[in-house]
Image (cartoon, rainbow over all chains, first blue to last red; front, side, top):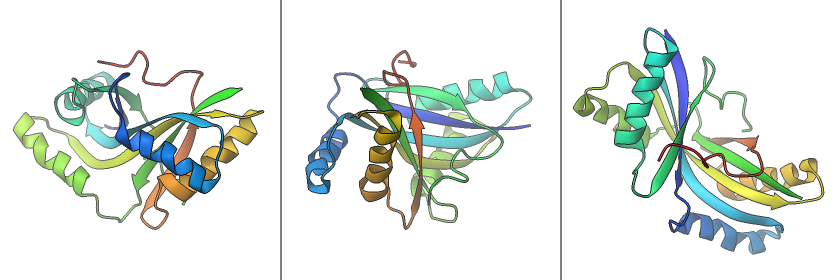
Length: 92
Length: 92
């Protein structure tokens, strides 16, 4: 059975986030006010074929900790999605 | 009042995703099987100070479409989080 997951990876608290600072630096040019604490991370979506949801999640946890996130500077969170990508039907 | 949001940005269907292919190419080295359809995107978390949730979401939608995503090749989805980052308490 197929399970679709997302892994959200973000810079840990206290770790420099130059992309987040770049976004904040662009807000003035766009005339956008009231935005703060911008953190830029990655989101990886993937499909796992496994016998059950627990086995599928174990594969994702291993993949996240060994390949997708750098545990020294990043934290991650595993999110189970529906049968299809969470971005289907998203804004174009 | 402060509202915390995440913007999930992903390559559109049909758009080449070299990072996703790189992850798939690494699975064999890790001895991980059953993973497919890997898509690598970005996740931006931010705080918006606004009068109400609707006004805050309007700011995020504008930021996402004008700065965070490239509408030619990427789709995005806005997600409202709690008062703190969704990654607080995530795996280290």
